[in-house]
Length: 187
Image 1: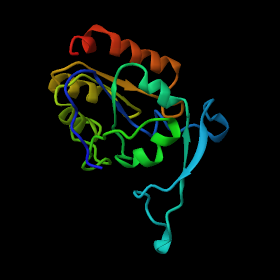
Image 2: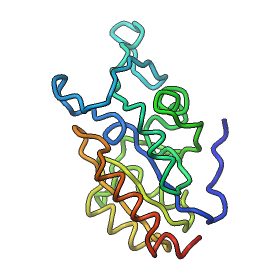
Image 3: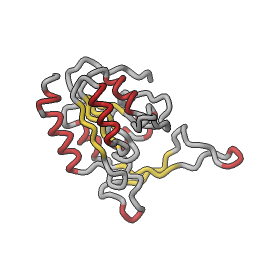
């Protein structure tokens, strides 16, 4: 499925990372956040095993209620994840989301000389000035400074702990920001 560019600025974008916010992959097995179910997945980007053996599926923890909550606060959703378009096949149906556009990343593993996350530059370009909230576990001050200097619209960079995933307080922050004056002024 081709990745559409963001539409007219009617609502802010909510750019979603998978690992960290939706899949609290740093949680210990005995600390799985409430509501999360374990899924074994084999996306195409997994590396083959020794001697070319098929890749070992990964375990992904997902909360099936997150989709409903993400659709509620008045955003246009898009994936901003190393899963790229594969999030539509592996993640979306398990949390109740429809297929979403995704930010295409050239090299998700690269870190920039300025200390920004590999995603930051491409997210700013893809958003094309449109207000956005970005939820990720790799956001830091270098990313915030880059977005503030190069993105003309409002932006919320919301870091989620990779062992906890999205929690009630994160959903409250996202809903408040979408309804706030910065994002609402651009509708």
